[in-house]
Length: 96
Image (cartoon, rainbow, N blue to C red; front, side, top):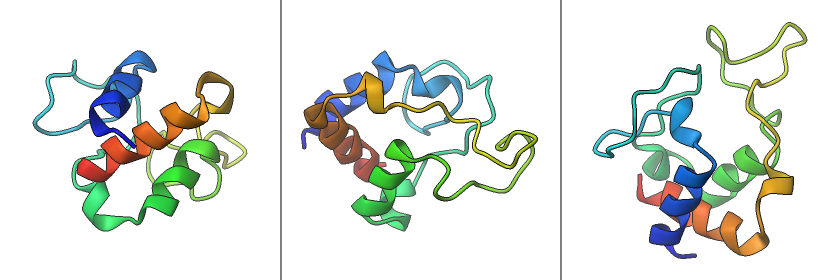
């Protein structure tokens, strides 16, 4: 994947509304998503891919991350991404 195109996908989907990324010039998050700074060094690509495709696979513990049923508040993105965009997005997340 191409990290630069993945960054553009991240911006288009407005992921920065919930996820902080240190060193980027996105607006400050207003939603509850976890900080993504350093995620690329802590998680393998498969984990990042699964997190985008199935946000309920691993729900981060913390205030606001889950709804009343314990499901992730992260929206389903599968309908908003092509396979190429998904690969590029994961490539970008791996650079974090």
